[in-house]
Image 1 (cartoon, rainbow, N blue to C red):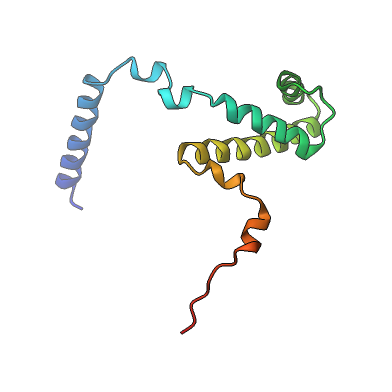
Image 2: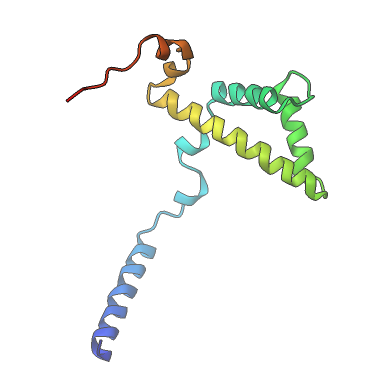
Length: 128
């Protein structure tokens, strides 16, 4: 690329950036979008209870107690506590996201079917 083309390209890029800065909305970054700022409380509670059951945690049967324990682990200077927090947080997040996605896409009923349903009604295989 010759120097003239390179300068022209930089000039175009600079003009685009300046136009974006001039017309930028300064209020845009101050608040998260509505979809990110909302918590699905139903999924939060279900995921918290599942986490307690799955990991057999010895916390009170309240979501607040679980999250107090999680904050203790997060703020602890011990490396083992931080590792445990990361593990619990990842498991919680996986369950929470799965719940939110299944509820938002209308597939929440799939968890209500018993595993025996699939064995009672086997899928048909096409024979050629």
